[in-house]
Each structure stands twice: as C-alpha cells, then as structure tokens.
Amino acid sequence: MNIAYDTLGYSKALQKAGIPAKQADAHAEAVRDHVMPEIATKADISELRNSMKVDLQRLESLIERQTLQLTVRLGGMVIAGVAALAAFRFFA
Image (cartoon, rainbow, N blue to C red):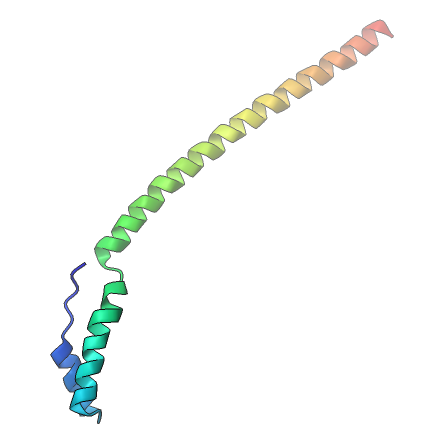
C-alpha cells in the first residue's frame, strides 16, 4: 500500500501551531510508521467491494436454492395431505 504522506509538511504545520520541532518531528514519524499502514487505500476498498459482491451472489444463490427446496417440500406435503383426505373420504 503506497500512500503519499508528507512528514515534513505535517511537522511544519505542528510547529506553526506551537509544538516544539522535536515533538512535531516525532509525531509526524509516529503517524507515518503506525497510523498510515492501517489506512485503507482505494485499491483495498475496491478489492473488498469485489469480494463482497462475490459473497452476495453466492448468498443469493443459496437463498434461491433453499426457496426451491422449500417450495418442493411444501408441494409434496400438500399432495400428501390431499391424498390422505381423498383416502379417508374414499374408505370412510
């Protein structure tokens, strides 16, 4: 991940605000070393978005398959129920 980070500019901005130069430099370096690596880039977000699209498509496929299975089961139960009622009526 390559993010351009201007440590010198950041340090100078802190110094303008009244922070001593050594502290400003240390803060700028700490941000560069510990904060910047954790920031998501556009490429990271794009990769995550693509991964989520694939996962969503897989989930939609599973839901569709489950819906079909439930429809078939319900249809089978309705047919069995109608057959049982017909048998009771025929033999009763």
